[in-house]
Length: 317
Image (cartoon, rainbow, N blue to C red; front, side, top):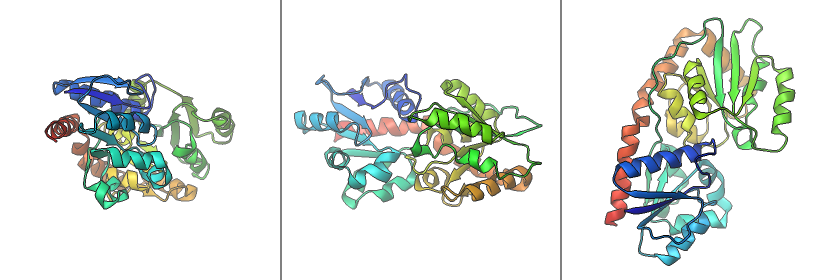
């Protein structure tokens, strides 16, 4: 098939949506399809349109539906779609109605959809290649935070929690991610002076970020909303356990009974969880085992097969 893949972010942008689009393009091309990636649909011939983001990709999705009402349209829902926009934004709601197939990236996403929309939805977990076990520091207990600086990520929760750790703690927090909001860089530099355990590195390449995750003892994900975080896949498939805010998007990735959650925004609870993970070897081992049990969900071969099956279903629709 001729497929146009609409994404609000092209590959040069270092964020999860861009990585997802690149990965799906690769999977679809391997399955024998011709795939063009673009920010907008310019009317080019296509048998199928796949759109990431209900609100941001509403325009091209709506125009394709009007031009080709008999052709399939896939909508992939992001965290801001699921947990904000589809509740109140007219464009996002219209995208849901116009899509013939809907994809959510973690198990809890289906619960956010009305029954008629859920009937045309499926779960496709994201994936990451496995990395060999990395050598981790001995003198320090390193926690990697891999997120850009914007309100949607609650980016400074780890830094604030670090100030509550006991003086004897070996924990260091290494934060990778660029400022995507005005004033965030200045706030990060000010906070660094108050939080000696926390170090902000700014934006780094995807490869370097993955290596830092693999060398860390933990990944910390503090977001208030996630559609299905790529960094969870990258941590789990490199043997690095995760501490995460207990929000539906993270629960949908790690499982309802995962032991490494803390209540979103609760700085004291996060500090206590960090301290427990550092000092309690049995608890740390339990985190590693729980993550290892989820790793098969995030295998590239599994995601590739599900993406190819989606395209085949669209062909036959």
